[in-house]
Length: 111
Image 1 (cartoon, rainbow, N blue to C red):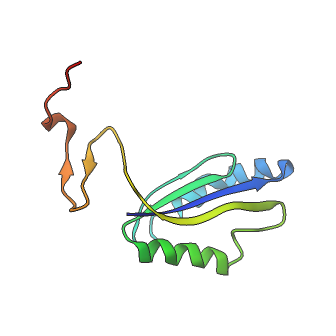
Image 2: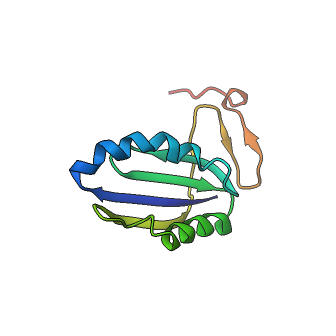
């Protein structure tokens, strides 16, 4: 999997207006090709995970082409595509070969 990572420095007078847009920004990504998961913070951090490098790079470039990465009062600090090295959640994990692993199938850890 591949991720698009963004961090912005946002002028304080714009923060409240942008916070109101976060749910719409998040919801609008689910139809993008290859989109798997996204997280947006209220203070200008974002990570979106894609199935493949081409989908991640396509989104990354599209945002640059639209001028959406740097705008007046919203300065990009990080706008990067990177291969995902690991994932973690409470429902299990998926190996590179696509096999899903359920933690309830694993023996309990002993300490």
